[in-house]
Image 1 (cartoon, helix red, strand yellow):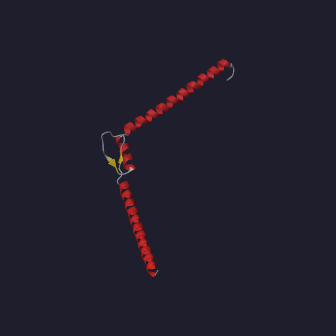
Image 2 (cartoon, rainbow, N blue to C red):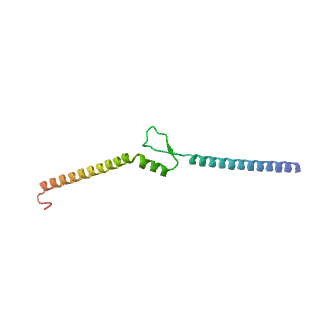
Image 3 (tube, rainbow, N blue to C red):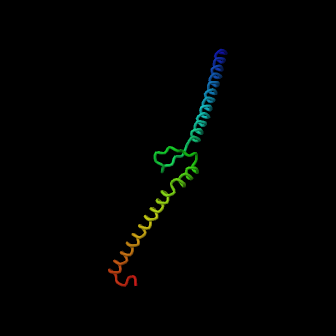
Length: 114
């Protein structure tokens, strides 16, 4: 019976040691994975989507924005102008529709707007 107790205690200690070793190994693997992920994030480079056939990369968003502002100034200005033109066209179309609806309403109900 005493031998059985010693064997059980020995097995228990071995099991505890094994659990500790596995926990330490998991912790080490987690730290290594975090370190690798951090290095991977640090290695991320930003690429200009406007440049064609150009593999230049920028370390941060600010550097990329400076590049775009300098290298693509005209292209950006054209895009802004095109956007303004589209908005103006839509506003004019809505105004024409409203005027036409008002004219039809006046024909149908004379004196409605006067």
